[in-house]
Image (cartoon, rainbow, N blue to C red; front, side):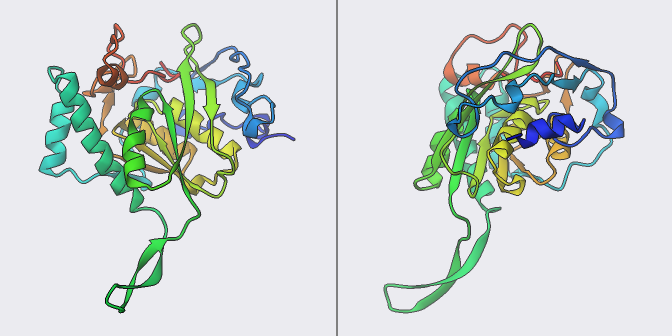
Length: 301
C-alpha cells in the first residue's frame, strides 16, 4: 500500500505538504536521501517510513529566511497573552546570565501556561452534572476521544511533565529528528507512537521552532499515521515568524500555539533575539559553537 506521503511526492508536490507559494520560489538543492533506519515504519509493520524512502528531500535555501516578510501571521496561530507576568518570565529565560536552575523553573512555568492555553482550543460539548446538593449544573465536557502528547526530542520532551500534570492519563510518544551534518537535511531517526492515535487530538511539542523543518516532518509522520490535520496542535515556547509561516502554509489546518514569536532568524537560521540552545541550557550540556537554538536545525540552513 502506498502511503500518502509517497503518493504526494510522486505527484510532484512538496515533501512537507502543499507546493511552495510563489513568494517562496527560490533555487533549491536536493540532498541524497537519508539512510533507512529500522523500526520506524508506521504502526510497527516493518515497512519503510516515507521520510526514509528514496525520495530526495528538496528544501529552499537562503532566500527562505526573508521570504515571509510583509505577510500577515496565519489565523491558525495563537500566541499566549503577553501579560507582565509572561513578559517577566520570558525576560528571565532569554537572559544569558540566568542560572540553569532559574531557567528550568521559569521554563516549566511557561510550559504549564502554554498547555493550559492550548487545551482551550479542544472541542467541548454541553453536559449536565449533579452537584453534592442534588442540583443540576449545566457545564462543558471534552468532546473528543482522547489526548495524546508527542514530543520532538530532545527539547520537546521537557514539556511532557507539564502535559501530564494538566491532562490526566494522557498517552505520550516521541519522535527523534536530527540534522545530517553532511547533507544538512533533517532525518527521522526514531519513532515511538501509541497505538490507535488516529482518533486522538495530538499535542506535538518542541520548545523552539526556527525554520519549522523538524516540526513539518513530525506533522507529516502523524498524518501518515492517519491523524487528521485539524486534530494536530503544535506547541512551542518560542517560534520564529519564518517557522510559523512554513508550518501554516504546508499544513493550513494545524493549530500553532506558542508563548512568543520572534521576527527574525539570522544567516544560520537561528531565532533572533531567541533564547539560545534550549536543550543545552535546560539539561546543562555543552552548547554548540554557533549558539544553535534548534538541535535539529532545519534543512534550510
